[in-house]
Length: 317
Image 1 (cartoon, rainbow, N blue to C red):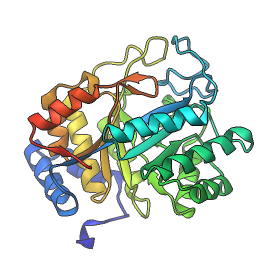
Image 2: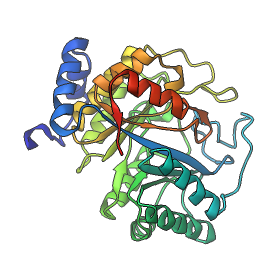
Image 3: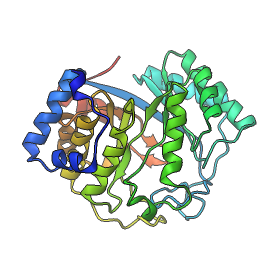
Image 4: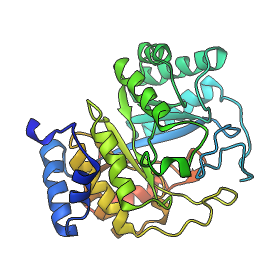
């Protein structure tokens, strides 16, 4: 089975898969999915914004940027006890991974980071997988997170190296790759994926997946986000993406990283049940559960339970 795992992906090789007839693409993705995963099991994760708004970055999709008027109220770092209480409720609702996100450009050593390290320890003590997304990290900060019990670190590439400057100018693509390297060298699992619907081309999606496919090891978790358009951001009027393009991206992600948990992430509220079902067929086996992803709306826990039951699938326990 190791013959399925490659770290020499090129954009052209990913494009060959991405543009296959949809039925053939789904067949290849589902074949690999069944080889490495339980085909009926979906992981349920919860994402909490522990510090909201005021970010100095200019990511064109993000309502938390201080550069845009989006109506998002700035909130300081949450109290440790409140975060742990939220994690406990998420566990009781069936979540097995708890993710904490802070709207920072990068981590700064000091009291705030010390508080996050304590949160990681507390959530790990609940028996949950723990993930954080805090912006750029140094190698030493990654090691401190590992010592605190962090399971995974999320740092998305967002899009291709070529399209990236059209979306973000305040940090480079190499900055992102450097953070992923620090995370891997610390022995923390990488959670990294991207966003579709930014106005990128199919080739951009394939180039992003090729970048992730060249990581060794591949990301343990690969989130595929559909742009959530927010008034006040530069992408507020971005055109709709054909859901089939999302399905193709999920399937290509499964082929590129067969062992990864491919997470159907932001934007599910705009998808039909049928589109989500196709994404599961394409190899998605993880979702975020709860009515909010950081500041973006998300289907309710009840809606997700009804969908999973309707499809004859089940959540991990």
